[in-house]
Length: 267
Image (cartoon, rainbow, N blue to C red):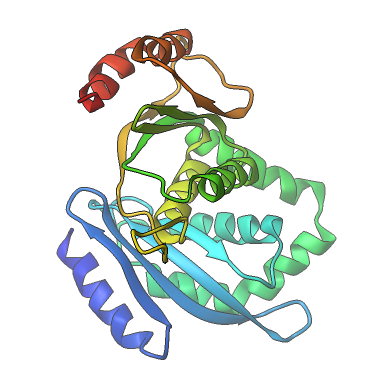
């Protein structure tokens, strides 16, 4: 991580020093740093709206945009997604310099205005969001590997819900002890999914206590190529053999991906 980013993290920890205002969720030399900030901003009625902002700083931040996730019990899913897109748009104006504190201040000052725009929403405003997401990132595909699922039924339902909410298609695949998640969709939505996967209590530990997913790895990520199949839905599938799993990848135009990343998981 670049020195400006390290200094920014130290400053943020000092600024957001109230109870539960600040929490580092994960640090990695390859994946960067994920942290959570709890703050408030004025909503439509004038009352404060609690906001949970999760930021993912890639290792080359601030030369690239941070990942951003917005959660609030007082906002609908559509409102949260709109706030996220507005924050990312604002972040584009601050690229190459530490920006997290400015983004938090900006949303504190502009949340009411954003929600009001959404309420009265002109067609052109809605168009901007849709076009911005598609043009900037296009269709991407990502392959994730999970080490295990103890609370399988609940975990599967959670993954299906996230994929549905974020308009992602693909497969949740089980073959013996191998668990893979293949996601296809807008890149910013895939990033949002990864933040949810890493920061939510989706499983239970050996004692049955709820816990976050710490044993997930991104095996592959690329823009969808012409030879890749477009998945129409997100499906959960179980495979009885490696050959059956391989055929799924080959049918999807991902034969090379299977050879390079999946075969190595077979012990």
